[in-house]
Length: 246
Ligand SMILES: [Fe+2]
Ligand SMILES: [Fe+2]
Image 1 (cartoon, rainbow, N blue to C red):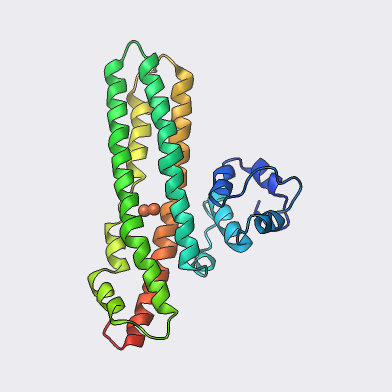
Image 2 (cartoon, rainbow, N blue to C red):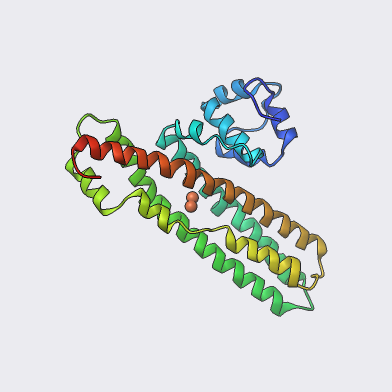
């Protein structure tokens, strides 16, 4: 079922409780009573149309309104992506680390395997942090510069120089698949790790890894199929207006 503006926000959470993390990224706090999605968005100063596209794409992986999402500003899209980065680094990664730590502590028989698991995840954590840093330090500022130039009457020479040195094509080429390693980690646990002492911890860990993987898939899809083509179109238009070759 699609989320619409007139549905109660509480029903959205009942429909799919994983939406809670999306609400949090938009700064929407619980306690919205019987208010609709539109009313709640209004209370928290959230663009309801953007919220709806993001939440529907998150709930249903077959629903992905690329064109509608591309119609929102680069600022809105990158702010959402940035909040998602913070959610991974500040909340999800520490939660997973804690579960692994607890598994190491409660495991009396296979310390070595647990140690490997811990190392594997800490390597993943550094990769994820590097990936995010690159986007926040280089890519997002570049996309915001492009948007600013696109809407300004005069194209500054420095914009063209920046575009000559960097382009969204470079980002697209370098944008590595950060979900793949999570899939490998899940597989190690599911296929090869002998059942740890605390089965419950192991299941919680797998649950967290599945949900992080799904979330990152959704996130990367926005970067690759919404942000990249949107910026590419703007770059072309800027070059055209500046009279230089594309
Ligand atoms: Fe990202
Ligand atoms: Fe990314």
